[in-house]
Image 1 (tube, rainbow, N blue to C red):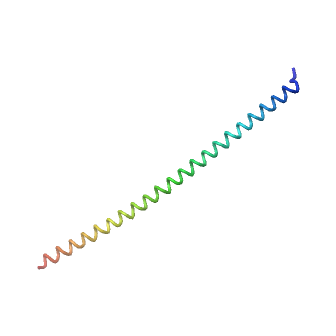
Image 2: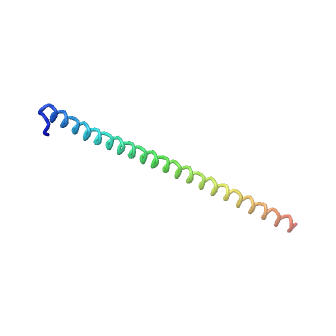
Image 3: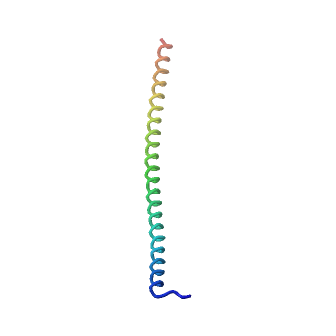
Length: 82
């Protein structure tokens, strides 16, 4: 029970179509995965920049509070001396 020539050609065409389909879906999945990883990396960099900005903000606020405390302390010392 062998296949005729046209049946063999059709079978080869179907096999080639299946292989091309697998290659195309694999390529699309890899492309989507790379795009997702790039997006995650971009988000990570944006979050790191926001965190650095917040750290700078808190450090400057701490410096302001420290200078305010120092000034109040020196004013209290001058008042107590008088």
